[in-house]
Length: 281
Length: 265
Image 1 (cartoon, rainbow over the protein chains, first blue to last red):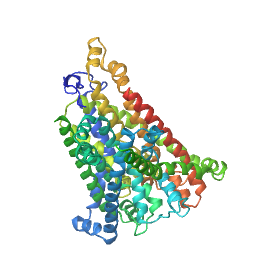
Image 2 (cartoon, each protein chain N blue to C red):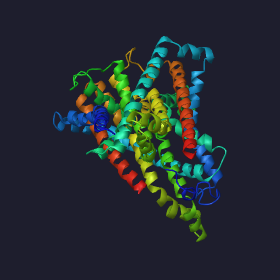
Image 3 (cartoon, rainbow over the protein chains, first blue to last red):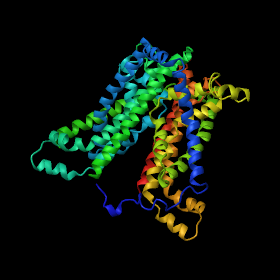
Image 4 (cartoon, rainbow over the protein chains, first blue to last red):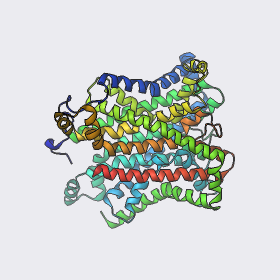
């Protein structure tokens, strides 16, 4: 629900008012932040990029187009696309039943959604082997297959979609739906014409975050899907290149993943701006 | 909605949730205590297990305060000080969300390695970064960088500046205003960020595994210990350490829920 303009938080009011950094001047604070970010984030990434292009563009190209590298990149992208599509559907359904439905255990279901954020990825991988490996209590053995890659990624990316869609569902005005229903629209029409368009900005941002996470995921895939030529996602491929001493190859494929990550962050920023514009309109 | 489709959606959503999230959660506790209490306890109290636990706690003790102080300061800068570089800072802070942990590990590995930009000079000064604690701290700080900033910025925006202005009108200096007004107002947001940071540092595997070299009893954190035990076919050991991490994860979930409620209140 759009807040009354007068009740909106005074973000823009008086840019010079309020406390600023209390112990240092803004300039010094800014310097510290930039220095911290440089040491922690920028310098390592610069070293990575330099290593990737050390032998020139030609070497870089040879490394990322080697059959194994291409195979791992293909698997990573295709698996991530499948995962994002499945979780977009189920994430929306789960968000829906958490917001619009009432059933016993709902608050537990709501809390459990964040489990993949909290549980270490290597632990997730270990449990997935037990659940869906040779000792599976359900009789489903998919360990060390490409399906395992997909299942591991489904696990780690589920919260992104649910948590992106949920707040939009909570805020959504039900009057529109009621109006549509009173005009004779069926459940599916209401969803397609009214609910879905309203959820779209959140859903898109959630999908982009989930996709970025899936592209780079390592721990949860490692034990469950393994590093066979057929099941090797890019992050596992990079690890194997480091271990076999091919640092240039590892760095080259890393730069591809880095570029993909930057692209996804760009998409997220764009989607959020687009969503905000819609909300304001 | 028709009751039939309501039940259909409920079954679909909850079924998916059960297979993907609840079953693993139940499984880990069942699997760990299947053979009694002794095997998991033995695993954690083995010298390597204890060392891994200590090292994990050390990572938390260093990385979490660093990123908390940085996070609050950075959030204040982003919200209260208009600057042309803010957009860039904001974008850089989001990077760890999207970059693969393996890429982060490799970047540090290359920067501080024998042939890296910093490696030789540091080696000459007798400072080991790779395959020892400093490198692991750097990896932990990198992966957990965004959480406090991301949780603090919206709260800081929301509280506005009126109370702070009132305090300074009444003669409080900036330091007093920060401790008495600003920090209490943003505390639940910051706490939420700290919880997420802690969980991420405790659970980090990929980045730390590359820079640490995974030397048992020396540079092994709990997640690395889990993998090593699994690779050595000591499943009981792997589950013992995993259950400890899972309990910490559940504590995290609980803390997230409590804090979200306080924040919304």
